[in-house]
Length: 366
Ligand code: OSB
Ligand code: MG
Image (tube, rainbow, N blue to C red):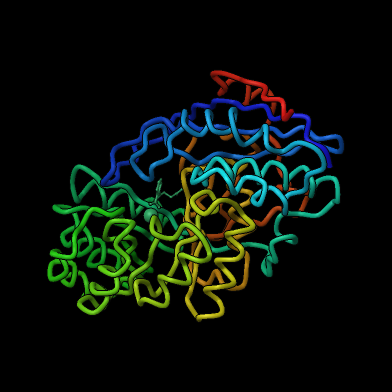
């Protein structure tokens, strides 16, 4: 396959409600959609960087810049998806930008071959159970209302964003009000090892896991924290590759892994992390970055792998957006259906995509 170039679209999607985490409040999801044009087919990719470098060091304009100046121009001559990461390896970091480019090339290739993402990645289910990530709220009653609504819609697992000052009380309130639901928390690095005793106060609430309590570089501290708290530790930000996942497991820094394809450089590396974790009996689940229907299609395929034994942050389109760029993903009986068409199995609706696009740029690959 030969790549002629990539069209980057700056897309702005108003969120239905503000999403507050320990790293800030999102009201509009600004992201890049990539359209790879090859001699065989077109393929779509989604770059999950946030506008600001607050979740990880990557950010939207940085991704656009590295794609324009270094990544896309490296994909000259014959190229297939498996060769993308090796070609881009000499450029350090920028995993989300690399992931988006590999995704677009993989989609083009799979569409040409008539193979779906699910089949290519090794999906073993035709639908996946879904969880929902609930942001920090202004008050406990407001939180209980939000959780109540999501449970009524059928979500099978609730994840609460926490930070110092918003942890034990909201967890207790949700546990007391809703009883025996699947419940977990995500701190997005908001704590230090000095908070270990405080975090152990979450133990009585039988959480499935606590996600990324400490800084992304603090693997040893996570292992020490695991000696103090009973709640299983799950890593998100710290896991950037199959090799870092293997290290974290060996160190005892995590008992569960959140896999986000963007964070780890692509869906092919995401599958390797899945395999490493499966070999160590470490449960994994598919995380989310407030994706559009493009990223969601691929995430739902990943979530259908055999080792994804916990519900993921793969919520329906209407949890995020009034208008998605694809036909909406709709929750049915707490599940989303894994697309079966070639490649992602979905494409952006041209008029909707145009209405959400604020800028377009064509990057030739040579
Ligand atoms: O830490 O999992 C996270 C969203 C943006 C950045 C980081 C995270 C999240 C979420 C939302 O928790 C997951 C989703 O529903 O897409
Ligand atoms: Mg997280």
